[in-house]
Image (cartoon, rainbow, N blue to C red; front, side, top):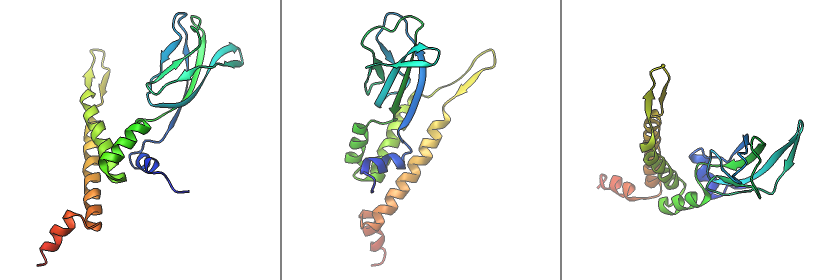
Length: 172
């Protein structure tokens, strides 16, 4: 079975659906909890019911990353959320494809979106010796962008794009 355009884009940018399965604790007040991911496409939630049992709930998951139960989860009661998430939503992948024109163009659009997001990257160190550096992601994204742009230009030459026309002008 052939991959859809969206699946091809996800494959190209390495954005496969990922399963998260984590345990959290209720606070006795809230019925909605923010998960650490967004673009949740499906999920199930369970409340702790004993040493070896989890009780299924009718919780709902939304794309913005929230799980919502029918009532507040009692304080210190464990709940388990198992859901599928991706970096980009299906709507975002569709937009990238529309703007980019094809799978390669959509991949370029996705990388550019991540490059813009890299403005949030940080580097810090604390007095106790702990450090964090997330700035190298920008360099990797830049290399990926250059590679995709080169691949896109090569593809345009093969398709008879303006680059192909310009190269053929040298022969006359």
